Length: 131
Image 1: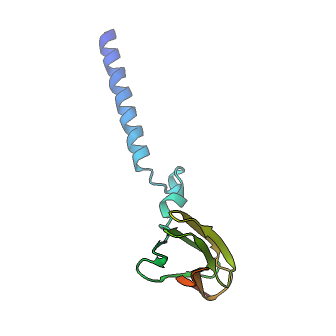
Image 2: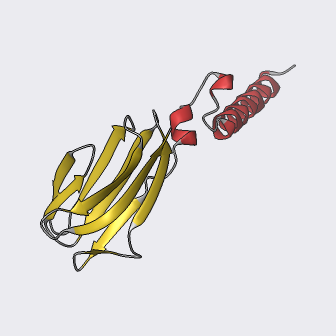
Image 3: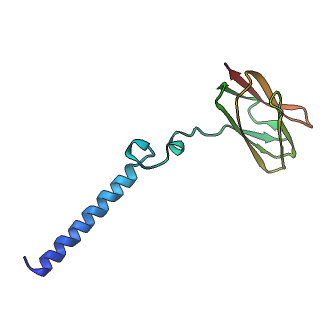
């Protein structure tokens, strides 16, 4: 085989390997059974977001239900400054006007709890932790 034919064959082999790698990487959707990716990124549910306009939750009071032991996760986007307080768990965070705060904590107490804009006494969330 001539040296030009060998170079062409080597070039084709490189292209085939590159395409195979691209296909493998593209199909790695985070399923850890193939040894790559991050399953948390694939399985992560979107974080529920409570949007506050004019000091009130858009769409009314959000309801979140989790099983005891799971993580409680939610975000608050607010157009007013206030303290977001999760009663029962006694977790509070300040949110600035035009800002947001994210909550993530383990559901260790079963029952029904509310979160509110503390100074406005405006309920924004009903959290249900099931046994």
